[in-house]
Length: 227
View 1 (spheres, one colour):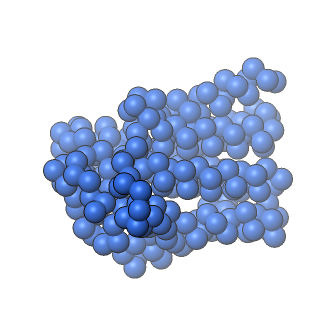
View 2: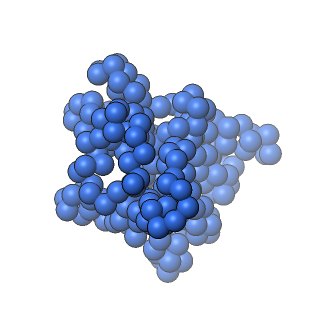
View 3: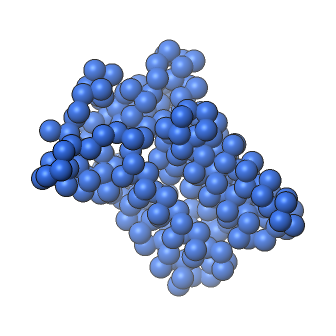
């Protein structure tokens, strides 16, 4: 079953690489979302800079990337670990898409798709804090908290064996994505750089004001923004 497993994981990555938010930005507004707001190809960028209604189809498609990949692994009985690896590959494809020079989104919606199939209580564990954070105006630290505690949640609930290593892998992918930030440059070594790294990990952005970050224009996005 090695070859089918490799094929499924490759499918997960390529399917995850379809840049739904970027396509929506190009088709509906003629813009490159990587030059607006957070600079990630994400649902928040669609909401802020493209069209609020478009978040629904974009979000559902992003969720389906990992959901379908994971489901196929379980459906064809390739083991929960292979199914989870395919879902994780879809998340990696979403975050570092082949079709956009590896500059993509954050992968939170795609993560929900993986967990909705592999272990649905974990999807709720992520979604509920996200909803709370969204209602309060800043979901990034809430998302981080849910991902940090997800391995413990999986350990102390009736989760499948694959859930614990998968939750650790998902957390690592999320932190790497926050730090890498679509290759956005860091300030020179010193206090400014340390501050930006801290903000990236905790807040998923380079500055503290959330609204100011979301509303950035291409001119602002091309500036350092880190001073």
